[in-house]
Every structure is written in C-alpha cells, then in structure tokens.
Picture 1 (cartoon, rainbow, N blue to C red):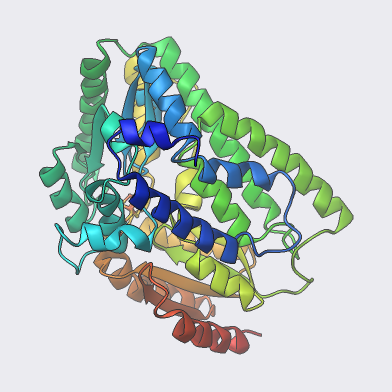
Picture 2 (tube, protein in one colour):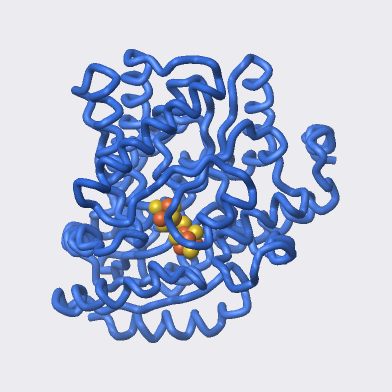
Length: 419
Ligand code: BJ8
C-alpha cells in the first residue's frame, strides 16, 4: 500500500483509480525517460519530483496550508508567480499530460479540444487530482479559446492576456497584473510589500538563470544531456518549491560542466540537432521527445512553454518601489510569445535566433491536436525556416499511443533528409 493512500482518501480521491493512474504514468515514464542510458546522476532528483507530485508535494502543501499559507493552481506561464509568493501563497502549475484521464475530461468537455485541457480537467472529474480539493484559488488566462471558456465553467480568476503587443495592450496587461495582486491580497489578507516582492523576483530570476545555464550546455556538440532529461527538469520546474529546485539544478549544472570537460554524452559527436517548437509537453507527456531521440537525433532546444518561453527574459531587479516592480513584472511576462498573439513577429525572430545559437539542423513543430494557434502559426514559422534553409517536420498529435508507429516512420524519414 502506498504511504499516501490515507491522504488521498481524506482528499476524496477515487484511490483505486488513482493508483491505476500512477501505474499508467510510471509505465510510460519507464518506457521513455527511464529507458535512457548515460543519464547524469543528479537528474534523478527531478525524476523524484515527478514521482512525488501526487504524494510528497501534496503533503507539503497540506502542511503549508495548516501554517496559514494559501495554495494557488495555475495553468499557464503568464501567471506572475513572484506576486503570488510575495502575498504568502504557493503557486503550482497543474497542467495534465496523461492520456489516462482524457476519457473523464471528455465526459464534460468536447472531444475536439486540446488534450492538455481534457487531461487536466479529466483528472479532476475522475477524482484523481489531489490538488483540486486543497486549492484556494485557480488562476486562468485569456489565451486560446478552449482554455478561456473552460475558466468560466470552473469559476477561476481570469487574467486578461492581450492578443497584440501595442501600447493599449501593454496597459491592459499591466492592469491585469495589478488586479492579480489585489486578488491574492484578498485571498490571504496580506499586502504585497516591495521588499518581499524584491526577494521573490530574485528567487524566480535565480531559477531562470539556472535553467538558462542548463540550456547553454546543450550548445555543445555532442550535448552532454538528452532533450528528454532536460524536459524532465522543465516539468519539475512547474511543480517543485523554487528555492529547492534551483539548489538541485545548480548541482546538476556542476555535474554537467564536468561531463562537458570529460566528453561524456548520451550522443556521438556530429549527432543531428533538433529544435522542438510549439506546444508545451507537461508532466506525463514524453512521447515526441522520446521518439525523436530514439531515432538517433538529439533535441538541443525547446522553443515551447516547457522550454525557452519559461526561462528566457529576467525581471528587472533594479526596480525598487512597488509600482516599478509590478511594471517590470508585467513587461517581462508580456515578452512570452504564445501563439495567441497576432501578429507574433517576436516569436518568429526568436525562433530564428535560437536555431542559430543552438546550431539546429532541423525543427520539429510539436502541435497538440486542436491547438489552432500553434498549428496555423507553423505557416509563418515555416516560411522563415525556409529562408534560413532549415528543414522542418510538423507533428500534430495527442497523448495516445495510437499514432506512435506512424510518427516513428515520419521522424525516421525526416532525419534521413538532414545533412
Ligand atoms: S503561454 S502555450 S502555457 S497558453 S496547447 S491549452 S494554447 S490549445 S498551453 Fe499554453 Fe500559456 Fe500559451 Fe504557453 Fe491552448 Fe494550445 Fe492547448 Fe495550450
């Protein structure tokens, strides 16, 4: 019997079904992440974070709530965690990456929406999400249509992410950030103070700096760490306590630096270098990364929300009063180039710069089924890639295993075409 069964029972979960869920995720994990060779030692900490995401991490949140803290569930990287933390709340991203919960999501939501949304809410509807019962606030945002209509159904606080980046939009977004501050202050009864906000800005910037350093190592030929292992670190980043996370990531970075010096890598020199571009791959979803690397290529960078969009751009730490800090935060978060923006020239420029920096041989567009924003935006991204003479492959897929054979064939054929 799992030591957390009593906790899950107390939270009202369907313990039997939840055990099946964990077994299903673990099986996928072992077949993908766990099947790799030459993994860095410290990456096991991040495996542990994923394994404890329904156990130890939940127990920790329950304890923190007993001490008077509030817990906020978030679903997008636009939510400024610094503000949430400065108001004495704990923000955790709750996106679902497992096929197991999708049939439960489809009982309420249409089948033809993105699997990330169906998986996430399927966990709650199937009584398999331990976070739902302890959540003090859910925060959504106006990005894609499916997400923003779901927030109405589940009664979340909604941050208005604009659809353009002009002056009016900047003002609108700054206002959304101020409203978010008011919302968390209301929730905790505590005011966000400038000195504490300065500390939380530093905490999150340190986390981003450590992630930037990890990704810098991927520029080496061969890269000293697999793309699949970096994905595990990124998925853990969305769940773990940030100071602890950064501490372990700094240790991993030291180990990776040694691996570079000693020439240790899971790949051979001259390995084909792939960029994944598009939708995020959240916890439970290792499908395409695993397929690409099993086909003999290395993923050297992810232009996704479980990649560059999460850690690039720091918040200006020079801002000293509250108003300036909130503006600095709003400005940093608005630099995230989600496909919900139109036009999204900054994303195209970012893709081009990144593929040069990481000496990318080919791009895999990773599109979750029914994600129209990223799907349609591949037309413009591809036009830019063509000019840069970088080949690409577009994969539209969900979380199921059904298309794995077909994807394997397409990925093999694509890698063959790369010089
Ligand atoms: S900033 S990518 S985390 S919205 S994949 S649910 S867009 S239909 S996850 Fe996202 Fe924020 Fe944008 Fe990033 Fe909709 Fe597309 Fe699904 Fe998506």
